[in-house]
Length: 422
Image (tube, rainbow, N blue to C red; front, top):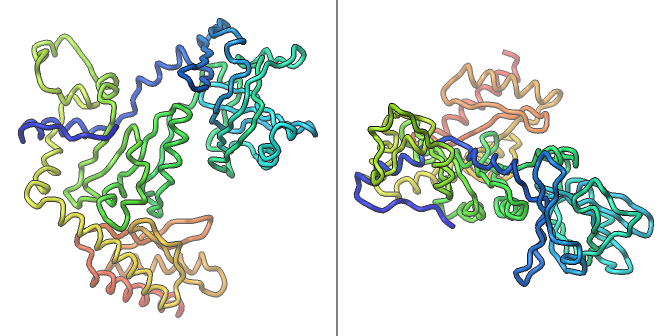
């Protein structure tokens, strides 16, 4: 499914574009806390074994165990716990709604066992295997899936994680606390980095989580030929936030949220009251008040529509490409002057520091202070892995090559002052 711009007259378009000027998280997902799916096994041939529970009670639903035993299935999820029993390796696999035990037996599949030995908690994996019944003395009564296990024949590592993105225990699941949302960035504020959107979207789909992308700063760079491929996977987002007042260089105050499921927007924002009954008509166009936290608001959409109507998209794309070139030009000039720079940037944000003798963090803090005192061009600072660095964010439509040259003169003047102790 892809995002769509509504058809119709210009007036109709102007009214409907306000739908996107939203800031919300679809609260309808919270209703899933009442009745949740513990685990769904996709076993092909249109056969799905679904074991459900009603949160807050011990009532269980599902097919008899004979429906699932001996079936070949595919599972996706996080590694929750690992138990090495010497000959056998047991792994608890967790998805957004439950846990099931995996068995790695070298006699069944040597490669799966080898890979299984390298697993760590919170790795995201895909496994293929055969469901089998546990013996009576190994049934886990604390798990809805405690009477079965999966004999793994094939394992694929989808993602490693040095630190768990979140911790969720079996007790959390029993109490109805389930992750429902994954947020990825299409251009971080700090360094302009783009997350692996395609890979994250796969994980979100497999674990049935809402996939949201923060593209407020970087999203419009998808229009450029040189960067569009880095946004692969953004089309799979359930919702997307983007700021035209950044990437389209238009007046401040226009942010937009695009949401695929318009019913989710209406469900979470629609509001009725007795004093609103005269404004309700069955055949009326979409009321912005029904798709926004605001009951009354000004015409933000005009700020975006008018420039695009007058100039088309090409000048905006050219301006975005220019900022990418200026970022590279700035980095090259810094290197020639003996500065060190961060990794190749995804977009138009990068950072640098001077490798001085002694305390580099202290030197660069002083350098930043002198740059601010000068004020010819504004730069900011941040910390990357406890290292103080100076940040360049090139996105103003007024920033041209002469601006970069002026910034370099300012940086070098400030550096001389720091070195001389002035």
